[in-house]
Length: 421
Image 1: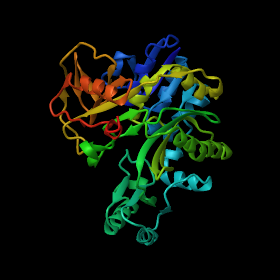
Image 2: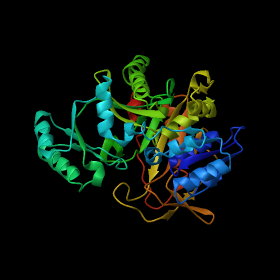
Image 3: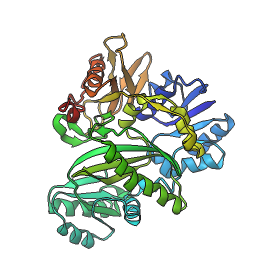
Image 4: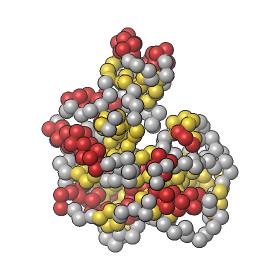
């Protein structure tokens, strides 16, 4: 069969890379893909989702895997299902778990899912009153999708009120900010927990830990993610069991009860406070760069898991994960995350493959025989090993083989657990 992977980033490249040797797959399309995805398959592009769906029907596509959140919220999965195309990804109504922070918080409240104390409002006076009741810092969130930029951690009451005012006026994020969530700040450590779901059942993947800050020691501005590793030893079996029981199980039960069963991958952003897990947010797709360190951990059965979710038959799927650790180091462009950078030619200094390491391409463009760094996060260097130390060595080993003007990367990915080993 032929499959389509929707998206253009490192997440989509990583999924394609993990599936490229699957004998049942005759071909992989990327819609629209990036400058390197043609190494794995064929890039296709369309003016709109309607044209894409017509292509999928015409070509008898066996499975569509939707990577980013925007097409899910827009309802691409719904249109595909209406046309009898198997799809890995939730319906637009289920995708509200990410598409609306107000909906997500109210859903958590309805089903007693542990989360930060909050208020959702469209009224500035109400926002100010609630802000005054909280300790600093204070979290202010725009309701809708804001390309990962809709959350502000305010360090003063004045900043929190100004942030709320700018969001509610539409100045910050347009219509996406005209409803806001204000919540208490939770102090602890974060985990990224992924459950592949078929509406009723789920498979829990190894817990990952992302590094959001630009600079070493978690300094500098927030980014889309500068690196990740999985599995995290901070996610003990007891903690994962509690996450299943208090967050994932009630979510699947609640979504089914409300007539919007969740199929696809449920990404739970977790804050662990004094040993207890609290839900920070839901995403309805694989995280990036977490996806890049999860895909190589599938020893076998990745396609079966994706198909099982799409068919609603996950219970009968046979799969196996490696007992290894993966570490991913994001290599970003010079001006990231502040503004767009000048396109730069990427040079690969050593053609000899680094053992247990691979490159996942994201913000790249093809220029003849060369690749150009054209996006903020350009690529991810992924290393695998028996432990975090070995995986980290392999990841940074491949970073050394890459060069382009202005490239930047963190040098301390996985430091939280490296200090323990």
